[in-house]
Image: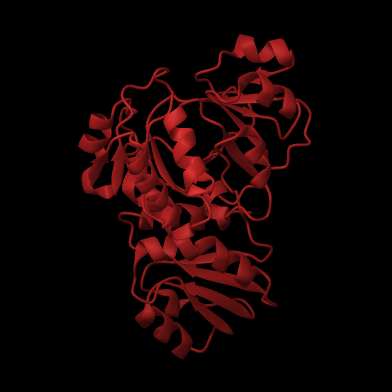
Length: 326
């Protein structure tokens, strides 16, 4: 881990690091974000690993200019342009229909993407220089206090992050407000840096998500986000070869030994390996792509092997469990 200044040379170094798939903590007006190239699934998987995030909750994609949101999201929904014009750059995240180019790992398999144009000039300059949209959840381990200084990030993440850009203290100090504009009525999924009252000045019908009585709509709360068309069955780690499919089946395994044993057992028409070397980061990066690929096949059902329930394996298992629910 290396601390960088806000000099032009250091910002260029930070931008190149992000473009090359490294993790860079960047200052925003809300909190420090753990920045990664939004197009790079392995970099996204490293974000979840660094944060010890227990599930693949959607990541917020940051852009350097409001117009750049069109690279990742459809902007035709009602109110989108009005909210962009009023609050961007700023501490408001908009949930919008995503474009197909956005990796599923960034959106947790949802049809929507969370996108924001930050107000912090350092953040915007790094994103501009990187030339890619940047996924940047808060730069802290899951469940810990949000970092508002570079020193907080260093203490929390240490060598889990490659670079930290020290841009001083965050002016807002709380996360962005998350507003879902993909459905009607618009819904605040997370209160934050923009007050509900200000949002209602543009759209009086904006509602606040009620975690007690509302049907789940917030990212990560649905029991099933991405569910394959075929039934998905789960096997415990190392026991996929003991599965008893009810018809023609394909399987998703973890590791060369698991692949060999699953092929030798003769019950699967196809076996796909998430990571021959049993690397949970590689497995996380490949998970959605492999599930989509298998789901296109002519199978009666799909099977997947759970990973060891530690580190990023917990997040992969969480996604597999949700995908297995119909």
